[in-house]
Amino acid sequence: MIELRGVHKTFGSNAVLRGVDLTIAKGTSMVIIGGSGTGKSVTLKCILGLIKPDGGSITLDGQDVTRGDRDAFLARFGMLFQGGALFDSLRIWENVAFRLLRGSLARPKAEAREIAIEKLRRVGLGPQVADLFPAELSGGMQKRVSLARAIAANPEIIFFDEPTTGLDPIMSGVINDLIREIVVEMGATAMTITHDMSSVRAIADNVAMLHGGKVRWTGPVSEMDATPDPYVQQFIHGRAEGPIESLR
Image (tube, rainbow, N blue to C red; front, side, top):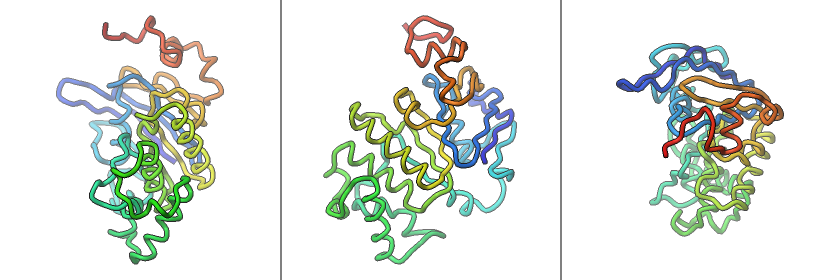
């Protein structure tokens, strides 16, 4: 469904992507791992068209992502941002229904609220939170709201940017399970960026490791532990010693 071929992106003298090749099949969950600054977020932004690659191609269903109707293109995506990115001044239901209240997906206000409450229920939150503001919720509840917003418009493709950042291990497990259930339930294609290996094992069908601006290894999550690739082994086991240089 999503295919990257030889994607390059340089910022000044910093070559972040140096020929990324990646294929994400329809209805599967791809998790991208790699150290900070390896280009995971830049890859995601290139797919969304927020950043234009310097070279290579990115296609969605065989169509170049840089061409065509941008609104129709973006309407196919849902996004769970790393920090939640809820709007402080909007009530919870308005955050969830944000895309349903404007643009090509606009619905009547009453209908948008009804959909928002249903999506909140899907992530384990009752209707009593609908009229609260984000500051009145815990971090874990805010993350659930962000997930409800990501699926509000029933997208075909969902991106998850560090979905468990800032959460305790128990809440991280809850969010991972919710993501997996929802992606399977919706039949969506998912792409996740994470450092959390428990998320990788809970969410992924396939894994790709970015290092040095390229995909170092990719394959089914079931083969990740057995791969002899020293970069993958160092990363998944959190070892200080290995080919990935760390700042000391």
